[in-house]
Length: 337
Image 1 (spheres, rainbow, N blue to C red):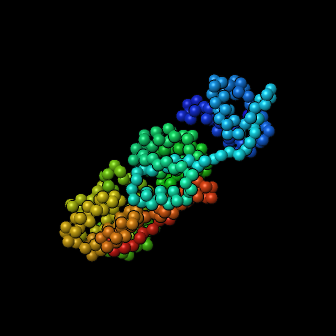
Image 2 (cartoon, helix red, strand yellow):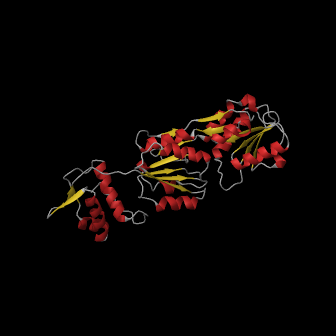
Image 3 (cartoon, one colour):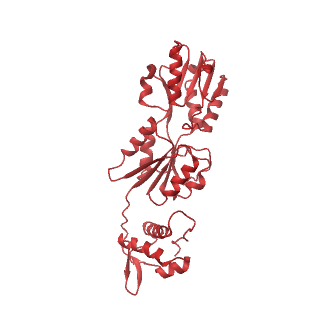
């Protein structure tokens, strides 16, 4: 029974499901072949100190699937290897907004109508993230997680089998390299993108990175470090501010703004003062949406390619791509700085 792991009685996954998954995985990995016997109910109960009803339920469900059968007086054996693998996807975002819709639509369009995708949101709350993952263990064929959280999530995600988990957008430190991921390389992304426009940026007196105080906006620490690194390398005066208000909006300054509500309020203040974008003040928004191409004559944007991120994650689900892939990032230059 080398292929049969000892059930974890502390796991949120029911014991019968663990036994069932063990046998299905052994069949799928060809460790068990048609005609081979599997342990009797009594043997598994004795080996792992389990109640008979637990093992009976696992075996009955496997019989209904056509995977095992019973021979009178000879016990159970593998009867089939054709495992129906319906694709059921658990998709956990931080929150929904315009660019997440682009990502989701791109991801959804890669699958047929038979594929079930359920979307959840953790809203940057670690306890909610942990609860949603743990409550849904064993219920889905794939788990797609966007872990924009300040706490270490490794203990949570390690409960998900490697081949079932895909991390998107934010790559946690010390993540097992066997896990699949399509991510932003925040430090190098912002540093390289700003460097390509250093001549246009350096004309401003100060470049300000605004970290919204909103509970629904998360700015990765690596991105902040990449911003500072770019400014120091190019000897550009810079500040990291917690939010933008009338008192810290200054002429001949450039502002990188994360929160879209803060972007709109800043544009209102600029309009109220009769200032002109590019001539009097500069703005770069974060994360591309269709609105920003038209807003105020065109807002420059630092953004990853969310459409491609969705397609790449979908191809990982289908088994067409593997590994940990950095998603393309760019500065889309428009008329705002």
